[in-house]
Image 1 (cartoon, rainbow, N blue to C red):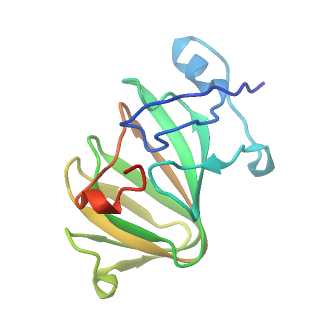
Image 2: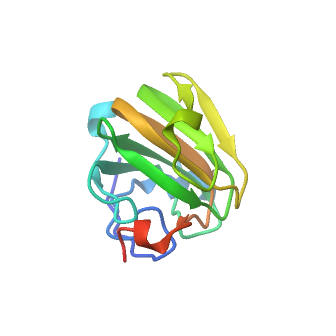
Image 3: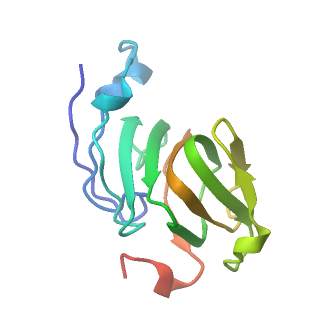
Length: 158
């Protein structure tokens, strides 16, 4: 059983309205969660702008609890230099994510991550990348979660 929840938070990756499942119950003695890919509810990612969509799987990213969500990035989508307040753990599910550590967007410095690849970045470490083909990545960690662009002009919320 799923239920949609709306969440507004300036620090959240979604930074706007977000659909989430009832997975938070898992951490309070709830039930197993089993979701087929076609059951995910995709929506806009206010903190990432056009070309990116988000589907929440579990948790509330504004709280100090585990979360899991997926991002769907259109071909050529650029992830501009940014940092997160907590560890970021990414698994590439489809497409190719070109990703790198650094304060400037330099495509030639990225590492090509194909489906099944994993990337783990420490809090405060600047990162950037881009999608080759439609790319779906899954992120998980512990909140509260957020994103801060190194150049405020890159932030679509501004």
